Structure formats: C-alpha cells, structure tokens
Length: 305
Figure 1: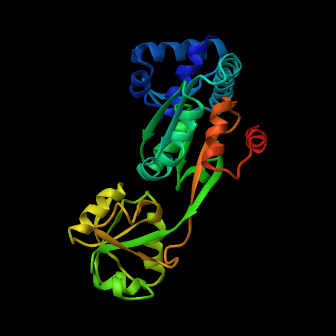
Figure 2: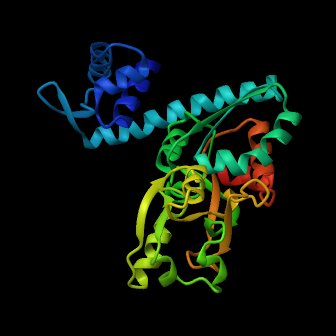
Figure 3: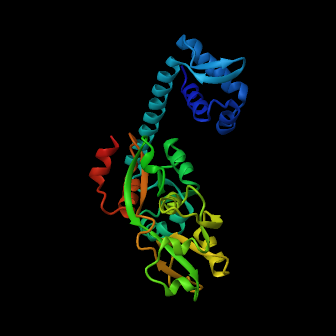
C-alpha cells in the first residue's frame, strides 16, 4: 500500500467518481490513476468502487469504510507536516484563505494589514468564489480558512466560528422618492426594479423569503456577486439596490443614498470555517482571533479536536 494510492482514491471520490477530473487535479494520467486504484483494491482484497465496464458508478459498502480511513490518514499526515512547520518556523509559512468577494473587499481589509505587520514572513493567498466553493476548498484541505455568510455553518467537516452580524441596506440614486419615505416597507420596494445579489450570495435567500412570506413578487432586474457592480447600476438609475451594510461607505459612495431596512431581511452572520481535526499553525489561530476577537485560542484549539 502506497501513500499516493490513498491520495488517488480520495481524489476520485471527491471528484464525483470522475477519473479524468481527478487525474487533471493530480497532474497525472487517467490510466495511471485507474491502475493504482486497481493495485490497491487487489492488495486489500475488496473493491472500493462499483464499475459499469470501465466507468466508476458508485462506492461499495467496504469502499465507504476504506475511503473514511484513507481520508483520516491523509489528514493526519498533513497535521504532522503542520506540527513540524509550526515548531520549526512559528512565524513563517503560508496562509490560504477562501472567501467571497464581499468578505475579501469589505471585511478582510480591516484584518489583513494587522496580520501582515505581525507576520511579515507569512505568505498570504486569497481565493475568491461562491460560498459553496469556499466550503469545498476548506473541506478538501486546499485552503486553511474559509470566510463567508452562507454554507459554512452547514458543513459538518468544518468548525464554524461567528465573526460579525450584519443586515442589508437599500441604496438608491441620489434624490430617489424612497429616501423621503420612512419607515421602509416591502410593498414599497416591490414597486421598483431591484438590483441585488445573485442567488447563494450575501443573504439573498432571506431577501427572497421576506418577499415570499408577505405575498409579494420582487421585480429583480439585475443580479450580481459584487456589491460594487450593484452600486454602479443603482447610480445609473437602473433600479433600487439591496446590499450588505458592510458594502456601503457614505464617504466613498457619494453617488448613492442608503436607507435602513429596519431588519426587513433579518440578521446575518459572517463566519470563519476551519477543518475539524486539523492542527493549524500558530499564525492561523492568530488570524482567526483578529477576525473574530470573541474567539479565544484555547477555545478554538479545544473545539478543533
């Protein structure tokens, strides 16, 4: 049994039994991946995957157990490397963060400068993507931390820690009629073309739910993953925007006006996720503490076990 065979096995499972996709990720040939898995199955005396011809179509009962053990072995091996790196170079290394555009643009700028000042020899990498992609990168070990509002708390492989609570704001072109009306109501918003986040981003599900529960159908004319895009088109007068409150700066955003939603779309929690069972370097925990000051190092390390 070889380490790379376990790696191939887990990558094929992670890629939905797509050997081609797994081989591309592993930078090796498809035939090489298939052959190594077959050699492993021969050594173990059981089949891990169900086959239809040459195609993998499922995982056997014994294969489920083998995959779980293989994942633990790979994970523990990475932990051993992390322990070595932490104690040999406690202030050197790399930190990979998977996050959404909104968090990268509006939340992290208040944290990263302080972190880089404390750890100038740590190389920082940011990967932007959808909340589901953020979770996938952390769960697969491709990122140390994931930061998003959606999905993180739902994944059982991740320890989810709250960072901050926020709600939505409505933004309009300067002088829009809604700016002279208080308090804001959902039926008022439903009278105007709306510009807001794409589904799956920045609390969009709660926006849809609020209208639905009140028997209203919003006229959403434009969806985006980027609050700056939303603000641009609101300023052009193409609609009324709904954005996360962290995305609005009254000094910078002079072309639009903000209106409090008064909790019409509920409260939201930005979370940081880290893989359970991991042994992160000291600077990873320090980053979490900067991002979520209410979280203590001792508590984080205890909950990771």
